[in-house]
Image (cartoon, rainbow, N blue to C red; front, side):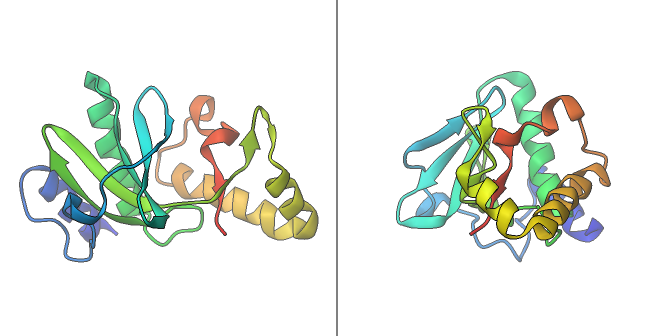
Length: 160
């Protein structure tokens, strides 16, 4: 994990992209419809790809560092429960664009638990509890836990 993260840090400084990244050029990953936007980043659908989303920062100073931190976080925790797979990234005009596994169903919709999340909880209560705990633990153990922002259910999703 440390070696992978170090290779990403080197890439941020102008080095080559990590060898295991498959998305290092925008060719097959141009953004389509805007899926969502917060104060730091925005996510776009990728035309003809339902398995990934394209993410980038909103254009203001602090967002750049937070975007870099997310890319490093995703790489460091690659393969851990609750962490979407990072397919790769590229830099263009002072922005970082990165391709991440698309999780399909949000846990919360309109400030209420989503129907899909409730259905999953009822069908597999122990598994859903464990997956939620593991997802929070995966970034908390790495020092990325911020209860004020991280426990917003709109930021969590279920995989198919």
